[in-house]
Amino acid sequence: MASYRTPLARARGLGAAKHGVTHWIAERVTAIALVPLTLWAAFGVLRLAAGDYGFAVAWISDPLNATLMVLTLAISFWHMHAGLRVVVEDYIEVALTKSALLILNLFVCGLAGALAVFSILKVALGGA
Amino acid sequence: MSDTAKHQRERPLSPHLQVWRWHITMATSILHRATGVALYVGALIAAAWAISLAQGPDAYATFKQVMGSPLGRLVMFGLTLSYFYHLANGVRHLVWDSGHGLDVKSANASAVLVFAFTAAATVAVWAIAAMTGAV
Image (tube, rainbow over the protein chains, first blue to last red):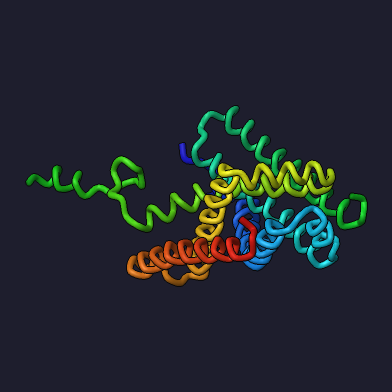
């Protein structure tokens, strides 16, 4: 017997998961932000590598450097979380392993990002 | 050749390492993921830098000693390559997302450009590092 449900009723709820586009756009927007930020950070690393502890403290105490470094790290960890998430979803088929790795990815990015940002603020605000 | 055999030969291929001939755009795609994973480790090293700085001069000296060791320098060199590759290929992806450069000829040309930029930028940064006493 033919179904009484209309094609629209059958299609509803089977489409996009409603948040795939957000993830895709977030990956690209963070990528665009990271182009200038990481180029700036690369030159920062060159200067920091040549300097000692005192230089690093003075460098990160500059409000501009502290702000840009916090943004670079926070957006990097955000972008990394999005990127590795796709890698895990593509290659890991076992549901439990996949879920465990996705949660681990989130926790590692969250913890490392929070530690890095807090550390920079501590030094920049004169606590070191 | 029978129709069936011809049909089977021309079946579309799924992009899989065992059935696809290696080509440059395939290499750039795989390398984008590989360098992304490498940079994940790089960001954790950056976090370790910030934490060691907040812990004080001794922890910071230890961090600099580890990163200044031959192994640390090798890791930093690999991260430099990974960074410039992921940066250039990421921009290539953003251009593709805008709908440009998607034909085979342009994609092959931009792949070569990405490799050339990666090599040139890495050499330039390490030359600057050597001149400024960073390594």
